[in-house]
Length: 332
Ligand code: TRP
Image 1 (cartoon, protein in one colour):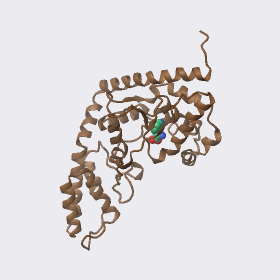
Image 2 (cartoon, rainbow, N blue to C red):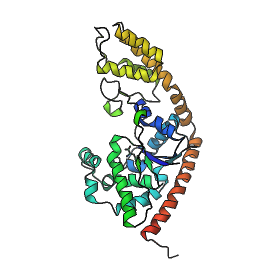
Image 3 (cartoon, helix red, strand yellow):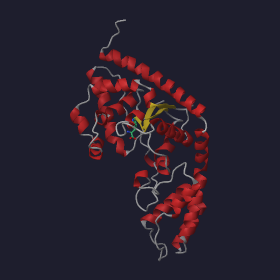
Image 4 (cartoon, rainbow, N blue to C red):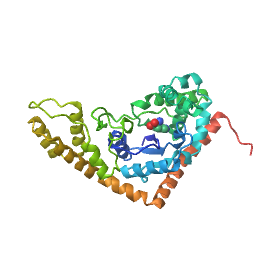
């Protein structure tokens, strides 16, 4: 079974875009791969060095991913900082990571622009920490989106370089896990582009969204004055709402409103009401599980503890071997 590693940044709540874009595939992957999913709390310090509630953010992400279907019996779910071997491998990799190549990484350059007053070394070495996360478990696959391609390339470089420098085929060279066709792009509610929290409040529907708020968001979604010609092409904002309906509603419902649109008889108010109700139905089990988990600290503690133990088992082994390969020997 191939080993897969993926990190989850502890920021924000899961929305339908995250769910269909990645999380649902993580859930499926658990059946066929040896998966390590961790909450990247070390990484979060590169942008938020003094977080107001680091523990709360980590807990929140843990709850939502569990609610979405990550299963601690099938995967290893852990908190990055519970596995300090990560930091040691990061240190070793940093010795062979060069300023020039790190400075050329696009996401680093973006961050320099975004936070000019905090261009810290952690930001520069974000790719080495990411490499450590993955090769710590000798993983071969990394399920990441387009925005992480360069980080993945760096990861491969660092793994290869370690092997070359110490003359041993020690780390497998990880490659991207491509979801291909399975990736569903979820549009946002603001009429253009994809669902995302950075596109503004109201654009995203969260898995744990309160039904009242959900209705409000959907009813406020942008529409137009309606079709004027039979079977006319849908403008983007309308097409996006249909795409959302296609994701959360039954086929009959979708067909019903599609026909109304094509006959120029659609009433957007009814259409959006139906969309909102179907979204509420779709998200209901997530809301329930989130509430359940939130009131079960004991269970969360157990999940995290078992995850840390499993992750450290593999991490300790890798670090022990890596130390020997680099040349550290015990005097005692
Ligand atoms: N950088 C990733 C992101 O922003 C999170 C991450 C950290 C990660 N370490 C990783 C992803 C290792 C895959 C593998 O989403």
